[in-house]
Structures are given as structure tokens and as C-alpha cells.
Image 1 (cartoon, rainbow, N blue to C red):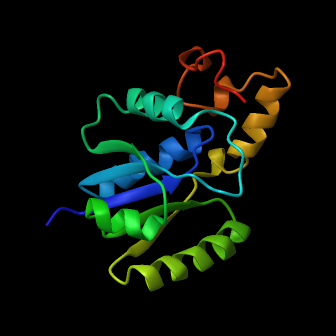
Image 2: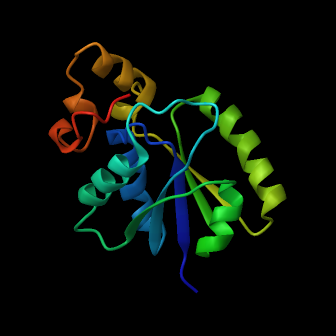
Length: 159
């Protein structure tokens, strides 16, 4: 049986930290699905369809990585795609507290789903998508924080 993991998130935008987790996840799993969910408590900055295409481009030479948008509960999506593992990155203890609660809820919804935490590489731990969006919103250079060139985004994507 294939070991399929989903790496869920809003990926708004997809960062070098996310890229690092996916690459490391590929060492542990047969396939990693970058699963772009819709967080109802967040307003998106970059469009989901744009981010799907960009992430697919980032991993175009890695057949182990699939990219898919989804709606609904992550634990239900895992069942739909046959994933038994949920991959998450942790930057600090605050992330752990938050992710631990979500892992427990996911396990309740889908008892066959095991959450695997990877500690973020130290050089990437200080940056998150919110900071990148804020820098970008005010015209700052975010290129060092993302694994794609901003020109890949449509000019009307932020919003």
C-alpha cells in the first residue's frame, strides 16, 4: 500500500518553508499531496487557482508531489484521496499547541489519519505567509521567501 501524505494549508502564498516540508516529506512518503484548503476564517490574498498552478510549476520535475484544491474537512479529504498521513511543519511551541489540537480533531473525524510533524529548518522558521503578504502588500521584496518568481502570478491575483 502506498504511503500517501497530504500537506494541507491555505498556502497564501506558498513559502520556502512549505517547500522545505514538502521536499523532506518526499523522503518519508511515496506521494505528498499539497492540499490547498479554504479556511473560512481567512480572506485570501492570492487566488487558489493561481497558487495551484504555481505550486505545480515548482514541483513539475517531482512526480511524487501532487497539488489539489479542496473544500471541507481535511480529514474527510484525506479519506477521499486515500491518504493515511497528514504532514505538518512546526516552527515553534505555539505552532505545536495549535497543530496538536487540530491533529486530535482530525483523528476524531478520521481514526485512520496519522499526523506527522516536521520541525521547520532553522533558517526558515522566522517567516510565515502573513509576513510575506504584508511585505508584498506594501511593495517590499519577498523573492527570498518564496520558491517561485512573483511574475508567475497574474497582476490581478492579490486581492
